[in-house]
Length: 334
Ligand code: SF4
Image (tube, rainbow, N blue to C red; front, side):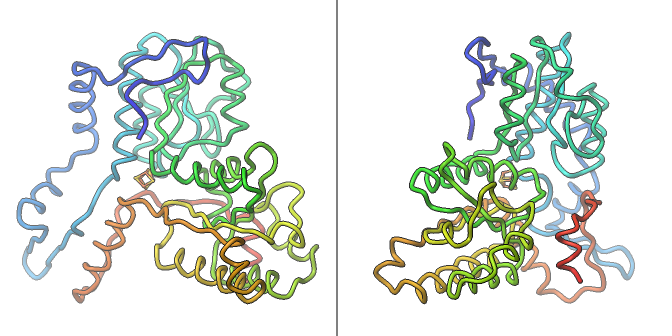
């Protein structure tokens, strides 16, 4: 986790402690008034189950914001209180939940990127404050903000940063990152940008097991380079050459993917490298680590447990993410 001291990201800026007791007390009160639900609290007090007439509602054991998102929301609210007279911006959505984003917007915090963009990075001035969301941002965007000399409130989750640490290490050792995630998701874009390292690194993003099998087949047998690049258009590093950059690979993942699927991606890629190189070389040419975050794992486990009980309806409370699908994904869906 980051410290409470919020770095400007530039040496010119002083660090500011947003989490003073009085600020956080006021933040807690405001956050609870916005997001706390008496209904949910009541069901929790009742052991996570409530029956009204013929209808029984069960609550998953883990429910609500993860610790990374709670922290990001707290810091955004705290930034509003501490930097009362300054313009506040955020890079993209703080989380993919329209209600939360509307609350952030109602605090006068303007979105700089993506859907519902309200301002442009080119308009930033040195006195402005820019919040980075829990899933972080791409290095190129971070650099533009730094170039404007703004105060940066970095709410990037520690679990996301631990993925960055791993892919940076891969890059420093000329290991290509195979990232299990959604190429268009902010977290994966941020991770991909770190996978380039100091220019030596490469990456390719796989979303599905079918993508993984395609990559594995290329590892074992080679294939049509252009077809590979077309298939992963928008999901690989510039200059990526599957004939060169699949020699030594490491698997990384977006922190919110399904654990079992990420493990399967790792298993399949590892087997492909083993088949191609034999055990001795494969030990050098394949790396992996587990970066599904604890909060995601707890929620996946809680859902699995909930699904053991027969039910008529599973109601998922959250932001329905209306991403416009990229042509690449449309092509896959067909
Ligand atoms: S990495 Fe996990 S805890 Fe952190 S913001 Fe993402 S889902 Fe939440």
